[in-house]
Image (cartoon, rainbow, N blue to C red):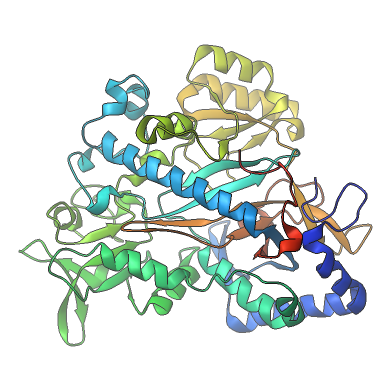
Length: 483
């Protein structure tokens, strides 16, 4: 199913003006505008890092000039569903590190914690402000062949990509100004102000003008561009672990040319295990010794909180609908993709018998790594995957191979200049004293014909996502929306 074209290849209501514009300017002019996009991205220094053979290779951000469009009335339902989902997930994390009511009620299995890569026993008994652990999250959405939107996975540790969403809009406005006069596109540039509000609200009591820092692993990290971008936009300091110290009073201080300055909120962009060598990895050179002491004492806020990643587990994901029902007494507004949990004998047997029909995923990998797409794998790869499942069933889930929606994309290797390519969407959700959902998010697109891999590290690209408020688009999807 194509999101902008119907089965006859005609533009849907939301894309009618877009296609009239493309007809008017022609393919050559459209390609020229694509070249302008590429030049803008190069000039603005929008890049990402690919790790290859031990080398860090900086590449310009891949961007497709043809925007993705979603009607505003549908997006409002998505917003409600995402806010609901994160409310429940945050209550779940808080419960798991404290009373564990959901385990006592028999809704969530205790044994999942025993083998959880991201469960941190060191966080037991902690009560972050507002009961929120995952302050910044990115939930990946996909649309199936019937038009239904699903949450494919939740990213709760250090979700990335929001800077590219913001920069995509800047580039899009510069090269397609006529379309922004035609369409009422919801803005996205309030994100950094909202992020700043959320982070400021987390500051310890009695700190009315809090100091916020963005803690980065350093320039060689693949998301360093984003770390620098967000710090600059918020007016926060970009720091590395060596710039911070925990004093005898269990407060965190930043070293400046004028001496030490107290830090109130840390937006951390490194994994838990590197945060504090006093508690986690002793050999970490990226974190701050004593940081966990300062956090537990309530003298500094950390976003996202240490331990939030325990709900990032793709096995835990399978329980999110039950988590929503347990904590909120509500039905999920956005569906999960049906998921088989290989830790259970009957579900594992089904997976092993139908590997060529399923997508097999390791529980705690990201970036598309470790995934086996059954109908595209060789017999040898399927047998290797089966052995991995038998050896460590807790670490694997499987899902049906969805017929992901496509959107028109300007290509160089197709039969036509514009062809459909599969895509997903990562909206960003902020949770704290208030909730905020980006108007759209980062659309990632598989640039290879027929490919389902959208990750930029594996050859994917991106599109600007337009949430369009226009009565002409109302009911575009009919009943095709989040259930």
